[in-house]
Length: 263
Ligand SMILES: O=P(O)(O)OC[C@@H](O)[C@@H](O)c1c[nH]c2ccccc12
Image (cartoon, rainbow, N blue to C red):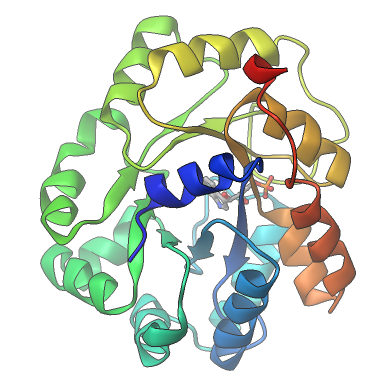
């Protein structure tokens, strides 16, 4: 079974940028999880970020917050999501990354959570409310189960902190491309090239850009800065509206972009 790093390297080897769509698990009911994942796989995504609905999603913008409310109203819980994933585990061909806040994991019990993640095909974890300084416990619990703990780097992190985050992150470094919460943006800061150059130099593992990326043009532009992109709100909104053409166009934009250094 492919690891995150392998999947991202494989995208690169075929001349593509990594593309990781975010889905709010159970937006539309638990039964939508399987068809959504199978659709993403068919469209050639590199990995899938599976969001767990939570009552206090401090890092989430309106589109994802609303999706979370819909999923919670449908009775979706972390346990039910992991059970659902495990039920079609053999059909999952790309690495899954669970995105959740720390509280549901703590309530679940760390060790049980790790075991249930393995049964569900989970290869990575993003917990945005656990800062670098507190992240060792997650790595100690999850690494023996071959699950990567992914760290986020913000635009405002000073160089020494960027270096420490890059050294601690696993699978890839999640480079946040805007200040603030998730959600579509119409433009980005103009010092991103410099930021990414420093980040890539500091990081022994791939660097992926995420936050605000919501059009095929953004995918191309942000993809070229690093090793790939993560797209959340735009995908969540399109899925909710049944607009697969938009999902397809976003993914297609990640194909055939050469890395800047090879141009
Ligand atoms: O929605 P956006 O702006 O495309 O950003 C990706 C993001 O949604 C996804 O990775 C994510 C959803 N919730 C998060 C919380 C923290 C970090 C990342 C996330």
